[in-house]
Length: 177
Ligand code: IMP
Ligand code: MG
Image (cartoon, rainbow, N blue to C red; front, side):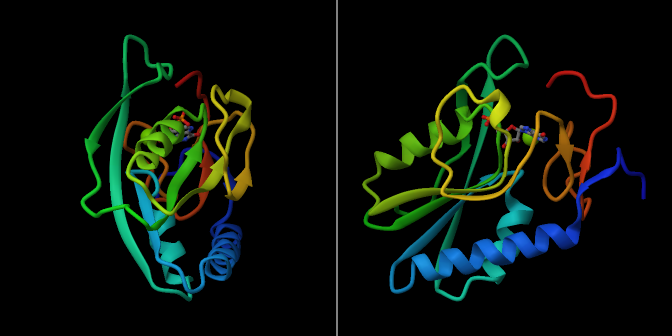
């Protein structure tokens, strides 16, 4: 299979981390109504693996958002392409992200869900790229902290490509989003 660049995080490392995170979540939410909100499209692979390692009942929903504006750099303007179908009220929500970069997406979703009167909200992200953060985002469950490089695979794309790669790769010759 054509791959874009060297492996940065292997499938085995990812699996170990996802298992560990699921274990922590299971312990933290035992006896509570857990509602996971996956952010499409990037988080779907991570979410699919995460839920299969949970030991507690869980409800799942998805939101799809995209940023828009004049430039391709994150503008902070975010549009909802697919909204939640399930109620959030009185539920313990975890927003499940592939990667938190500028933080604008997670911040927007966090605020939106906070208005829906959940019991609690947390954020779980497979990857945290803090170098480009523009707004503070509380990441309660973090998989890996990564430098400012562009990563693909395991759900992460570049122009909708490479989401299917089992490992996370560095995208070579990358200059700017
Ligand atoms: P933020 O709003 O800047 O935090 O952007 C989050 C979104 O940007 C993620 O959900 C990804 O879709 C995308 N993104 C940021 N960094 C990367 C990367 O290294 N590879 C692939 N997508 C990325
Ligand atoms: Mg993307």
